[in-house]
Length: 331
Image (cartoon, rainbow, N blue to C red):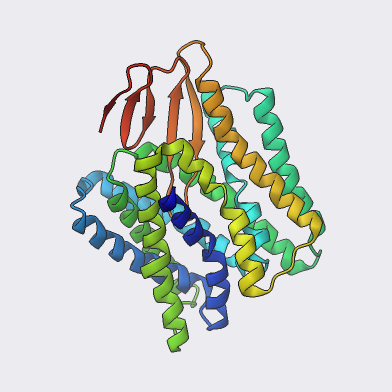
């Protein structure tokens, strides 16, 4: 569990360090670009050190395009939202994406969610609504909330695309996605006239912190925890991110939360936590052999998924196949 907690803390600290980087006169597009490119290089080196297999050329290009067209743009809106909203509010709104993933999967499979699932989705959406209503009504805050909502939708779409490419080594695949995101961010920054290098040692320090420490450690720790805990428990621990982000925002940035906003964040956490719990309970019930969504959740830099067959025959996630009754496994 320690690895997953380290990963959650790394990604939960990202919004605060983005806000701090802005104080060093670094704009959002440039920060996304250099953050992704540096992290891609570091993860590629780590993948080589642990002797992870490289992705084939065809799938590699698809992962690069996925980063350029999906992961990169949702990072732009995420970082733009952080310019206009407190970190806790931004993360809470963005973290509704698991509920959006559940809705998109239900639409794709033509399977209407059950009553309890609908209740959790409504609870999460109500949490977002409470936060929005409690926040100030200025133009900047409204724009920030819209950007955060767009980020949640964009990340949900990215997750659905990413899980279709789960057969690739995780660190190598993450480095390719980040490479694509960094490249598209460079292009966007050049075309918009916003590309700039840090002009101070503090700015360079924040850039290095993002690219060398936060993203690589967050992803490496996540995949290490995933191997040890499995996707279900990893996802459960991962739901701590909004709470950790709120605490960091209060401690490091002096942000203040109204009681009603705390309640809204709590509603989102309960809703997101309830989705994988329900999937586990559903997988233990006897029933027809059909596939159920157990959990789709990614760190602001990659996606993860596990599926459970209702009769308990197979438990599938990217690292292994476990036979529930025979307790056999293939690693």
